[in-house]
Image (spheres, one colour):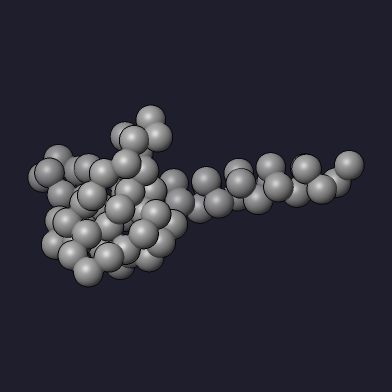
Length: 72
């Protein structure tokens, strides 16, 4: 399951999972550089890792959808 970072606060990242549920992930449990919109997955060490490939795939998909709405 993937988690998309919605808001970064002082000690947690507020995320939305693939089911639309929100959760708070402690910043010290995340490996990698993050920003709002980053996509995370829970790895085998029970830590969250950034998945740039999934983030880019989602960004491209959202861009294509928005483009199709305005092409008509």
